[in-house]
Image (cartoon, rainbow, N blue to C red; front, side):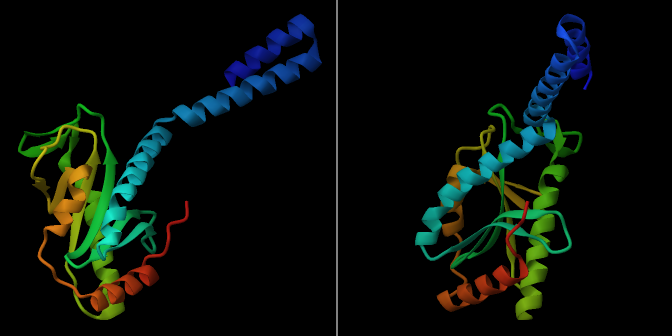
Length: 210
């Protein structure tokens, strides 16, 4: 707003009040667009969205193998959303996609693990909340308890090329390893059970509306 005011005053002085109004409006519009594209929360959301799209592309292979993949599902009575909910022969998985800077790594310190400068509990907390919500939703729909696995799939960052990191009840691994990691779990559900769980999840966890 300060930029538009200065532009308006300058234009008024040089070429008159009508041009001043136009100049101020143009500068205000440019400033609004700039802020919209460079605000930290917008930048973070875009990185997250890019990670979600990249993970979704990888998960298409699982769908060919008898898995159901539901993307961007809402949690009732919450502003949180589930990036990817996978239901298949080897279990039910809640996957949170992350796009990290290529130098980000997980390291120990002060009695905990850190992701860059963020304590691990703040990283895994959201996906654990989503996982618990899925457990409750499936139980209410079927009246049977089901194990739901929390996973963080990372694009970028310095993570082990092989294996995974288990932290706070959550598995953290490279997104490129996600499909293989899921399919290596023991088989637990039949096609009929997968269909039942999928129907329950679709009803209890609707598509997220932004």
